[in-house]
Image (cartoon, rainbow, N blue to C red; front, side):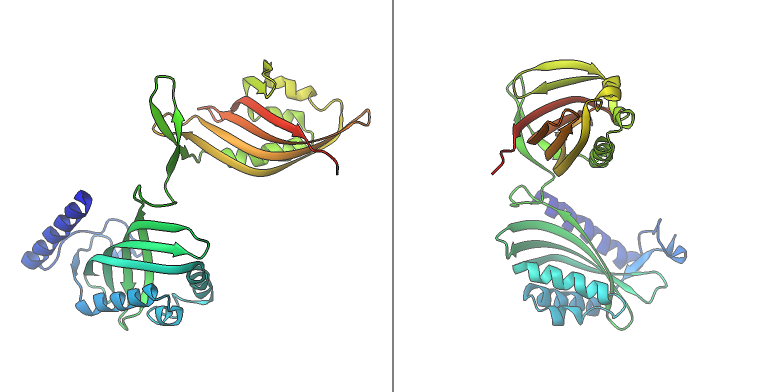
Length: 305
C-alpha cells in the first residue's frame, strides 16, 4: 500500500506541474530521434476512455472486441495469434485500474496512456496469479492502439511467477531462498552435452575448472584434474546422454556462483560389449569464473521390462 501511495503522489505532483507549465519532463532515449529532448504535455480523456473500454473487453475475455481497439498494423497476423493463445489460456481475468494518465509527446499527433492496475488471472490449467502492472498504451490519431508495453510487480501473495522461492537452511540457522540465475549455465550444459556425446574429451575439459570435486550417492568423493577428461572415453565405444531438464539457481542475495541441477538418462556401450543405461540427477557447481568446479551424481540403473 505504501508503494501505491508514493506512486499516486508522484503522479499528482506531475499533474500540478502540467497545470502550471502545460509541459514537463524530457525524453532521453527513443527509437524516433525527433522525440529526443522533447517534453510531455497532457493528453485527452478520449484516449483514456478508449483504453478503459479495451480493458472491459479484456476482463470479459471478448477477443473480437479487444482486438477492435488496436490498429491493423499492431494486431497483424502474428499479433492476433498471440492474443488468441493468451485469451484461450485464461478462464477468468480482472484488471482493476488504479491510475490512468494521458500524455502527448510535444509536437506529436499520437497520445500515450500510462496506467497502473491490479490484475488477477485464473488460468484454465488451475493456476492463479496476482500482480500489479504499469502499462503504456500508444494511440494514433484514429484512436487505435499502435503499441503496448507492460511492466510487472509480482507480490508475495501471487501463486506463481516470483523470481525467488523455496527455502535453504544455512549453517548458522538462518534461511534464504533460491533464485534463478542467467549467466550462461543452460548454454554451457547444452554445449557440454554435445561434446560429451561426441566423446570429445578435450572439448569437455574446457568447460571445467582446473580442479574438480566429484561425489556420488554412495558417499564416494574424489578430486580430479580437468585433464582427466582427455582419457575419459578410452574404454567407451558409444555414449548417449539425453538431458531432460536444466535448472540453474543460486542462493538469493549472494555472489553469482550458482548450481545447475540436471535430470537426464544415459546409455553407454563399453568396448568390452557391456551396456549401461541409467537415469540420473546431476548437480554442477558453477564458479564465479564460469567454470564447472564440482559434480554430484545420483544415479540408478534403468531396468529392462
